Amino acid sequence: MTTRRTLLDLAVHAAALPGAAEFFGAWLQAAQAHHSSAPPEPPLLRTYKPRFFSAEDFAALQAFTEILIPTDDTPGAREAHCAHYIDFVLHSSTGYAPEVRKQWREAMAALKQAGFHAAGNAEREKLVSEMSKPERDSEATHPAFAAYRLIKQQNTFAFYTSRAGMIETLDYRGNSYNETFPACTHPEHQVVD
Image (cartoon, rainbow, N blue to C red):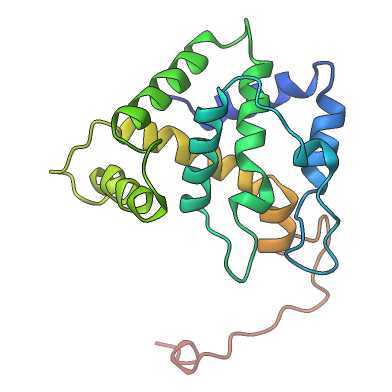
């Protein structure tokens, strides 16, 4: 199982490789067209060609990430280019983390076997819901549950470290502090027991 430490380790390793500054620079700026003040999509991401995944697997991964974190009134996985990030980090891990690369190959094979690659949008959403059922029901099983967990974990990491996730969604403002801390205005919290 991939841990958060492994994800961070892979990202740090990827950041040290040739081409990483260009990719991460573009990726960190991306939060395209969701807000008029957002920077335009960098050309590197607009014309990105997957290096780890096949074109078919990359398209399936993009669709899966967008189901997990959809675009609504805030940016989603599409604006954060989560699939791009995952592909870049996995490609960068060549010779470094063979067990993680193997997990991803197996995950994509499981998705394909479950019918995700060939399904339409509505069917894909249904498949993701079925794959995730063991999270909510300890009696449930699904052959692609491990793939679901792996993609969810890496997608969440990619999203909340991106501009779209961190700044546009969470409204992170960096190393700042509140000069005043507003009090809670909920009446039920005003009662002292």
